[in-house]
Image (tube, rainbow, N blue to C red; front, side, top):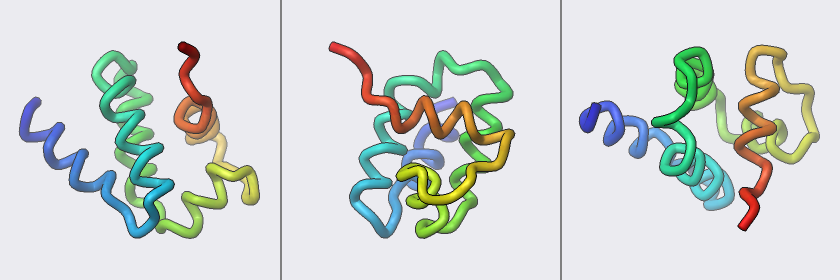
Length: 80
């Protein structure tokens, strides 16, 4: 699991600081406790090009159904 976490952390490094923050925060706070389908969706999300991913996060582009809940979770600031 440590190797996978390192690989995912590296893949969270993007060309945009905003995406780095959102993706890394999700990885650190949610990924380990997420159900397997959500984990697979996150890995698929990391394949999306930065401009498209950024548009999803800002609500400027329609999010594919299989990624919608994940984008919502990633972009919602945790309370507290």
